[in-house]
Length: 358
Image (tube, rainbow, N blue to C red; front, side, top):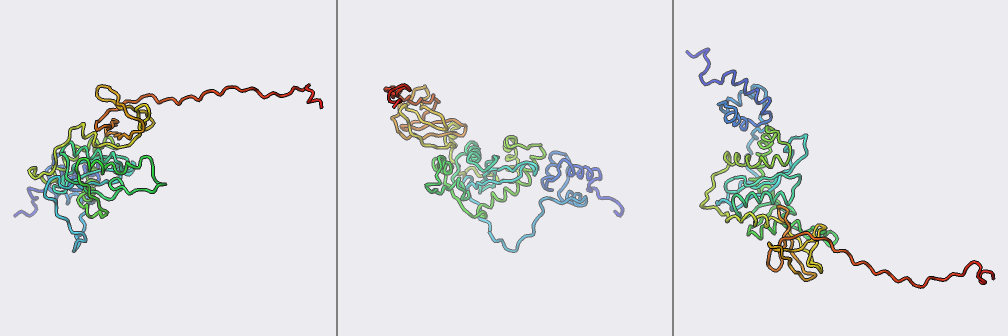
């Protein structure tokens, strides 16, 4: 009795045309699941995944993220999740064409909670840098607190291998700054050379290289600064969709430090020797240590002073178990060498001297 009649739940021709039009233009390159979310939430088109797949497949489209055939036996069996929120945070970077093939590659620094799969921090930079990891850590410390452990790879930014005497440079301590920060805050830093051991964040990069690139292109974002401003919104949406709800009663995050303390912890440490004028030199500048009221610290000559450049660019120093601010002062002029006394000029006989005639 229903021969020749269309089903009541069949997608209308107008809807199918609209779906194909959107996927051909505005949402080109989106994977099908991501595109489905946009249709339901942003375009007001109520449709399921199966009819969407049928419509796009019939129109000749293939999802950029096809399902791979399952292997009979996994070579690297999955490691069980940690039980507590903040017990272990996997950290890594992904170098990719995040803004499209016509733009230079950028580096995304990221952290994910092992227990919940929640993205804890993301930050773009041109390369893998200490600042990128510090900005990522700042997001974690500010919003959640101090985690129990970080799990990274054997990069020199986490594990410093001593160079030979010929290979040493003036900034050789930069490579262990992240480890020093972890030790100061009581965070265990675990490293490994096996990428499969950090499978959770490796899978995160696969997801972000599909979803984040599409979202950046949809918004016309092509710069690192613009992407960093958008990342908090992206992380909130990503965690709402994919992360497990954390059990705060089992959280191992310690109480977050004050903002001023966070800025100090996320710093680069240098050691400098004071001169005869109670000052030190850093980056070609001569600095004096002062307290909050402008009082100058009197430092004996040739005293080793720990100097810290904070994440905000402020330069502070520790001397006598006290934290000091720094102010730039004029460089000392070298003492001018005393002028040599003019001695008796060498006498030379004139042209008419008797000696010249002989």
